[in-house]
Length: 108
Figure (cartoon, rainbow, N blue to C red):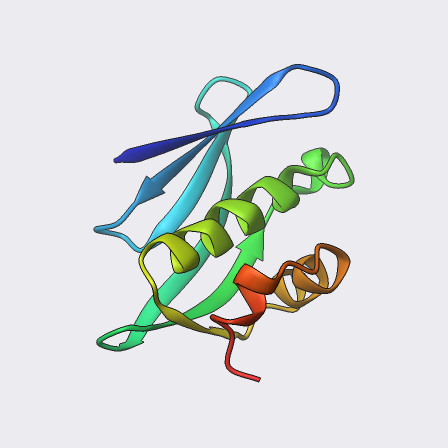
């Protein structure tokens, strides 16, 4: 599993793991019992569909999904893929973090 390190504003570290085999980004919460995930599928050779982001109820509202969204969008850019944004949260993240490098890789 590839690991992407992301830091929260309050300096505590959140580690995003990219499980390419299962096509998901994962943040282990509270040790390793709870997990936040972002699921994607390849829908073409160089095209992914960012399908679903899920954070357990007890952890919502803490900015955890934002780290998953950033890791997924950075992956799309780094691998020079095109992305369909099926997940409403990824759509929201891209709107709130408008970066040209992201827009170049999104199917509108």
